[in-house]
Length: 224
Image 1 (tube, rainbow, N blue to C red):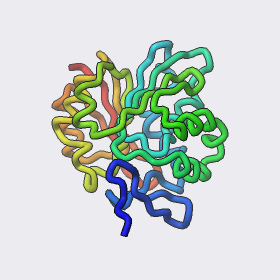
Image 2 (image 1 turned 60 degrees about the horizontal axis):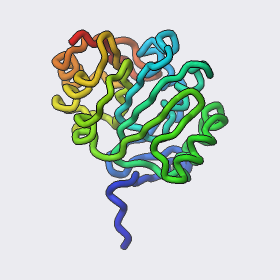
Image 3 (image 1 turned 90 degrees about the vertical axis):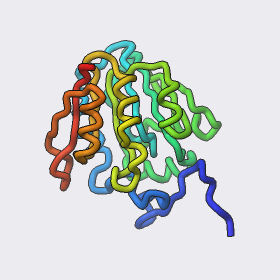
Image 4 (image 1 turned 135 degrees about the horizontal axis):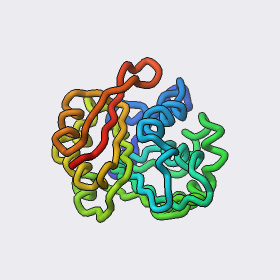
């Protein structure tokens, strides 16, 4: 029996098209509108693209298929140089990502530079105006060492019920410590313990309508 590489994604494919993490028993996105959900939660939740300007820093917990990055690229003007840093413990292969993106032709159409770089092992690369860095490993160890300050956070780990280590008080405190004044976060979850941890980290947290069947999501502004 071949054991899975514990540093890589370990996937099942539901209906042949939807990647599901065996480790967390959770899908990477909704086939009912994964790209639309990204736009609703992470882009609109952070008031993007309205806030984008040269030097703007987006940070993310949970890179997954790169769908959030591609959604950001679709709204980022070509002359607006921004940065995107994502923290991912279990990276998918380029082949797995490409297979997952088959579900989203609009994102797939601009994905080639990303997929080419990823297949070559690059974790820092350019995607149009976006300087991308994906930091592999446990975010509880890597985020405290990061020197950046995010203007907007995409908090997109697997479900807090199944992946609680990516939503713990200490890590949410680090999110706050690495957020610029008046920076923001958005996440699909409205779990109480996540909201409380983010409030404790210095965010003014609010709840707003979620995407699709999800009643609520969370977003917030950092006041320190």
